[in-house]
Image (cartoon, rainbow, N blue to C red; front, side, top):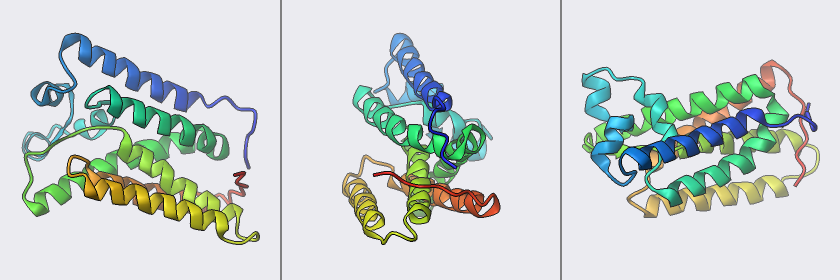
Length: 203
């Protein structure tokens, strides 16, 4: 059931942490410095698989390469997060966000190992945010199940175009996006069925 009057505290706190981390990084180094970003906790496969620095699977989605990267992700987080947090509740939303971010990182590592790009440095909240995108798709499907599929179709087109733009840009970690999206979709699907979460989507 949508909780219309609840302030999206988790979303606001997550956005604030991302901004504060960015300020910290720029104060003591540079978000464009790959080596410094590795020190700050970005994903780097050898340090995770060989040195067992698994904390990077969390710290990486609080780091961003430059202000534009941060701004784009925070706008997306606020738009999607404010809606989903009210619908899902704070605990479920928090779990969804973190699991999506973690498994987005895992997907990125697996993909880069398979294609032989083990030494890629990756970070950003977009994998977790794509998890929110996947969750919103589930809620759209549930909310529109008796009202046709036009909203769902438009949203699927938006997702497809977003992923396509990521595929065309080699600097974007599209594997993380896909991993986060699938994670968010499945987690929200499980939550909605297990708890019989009834939602409505207002376009």
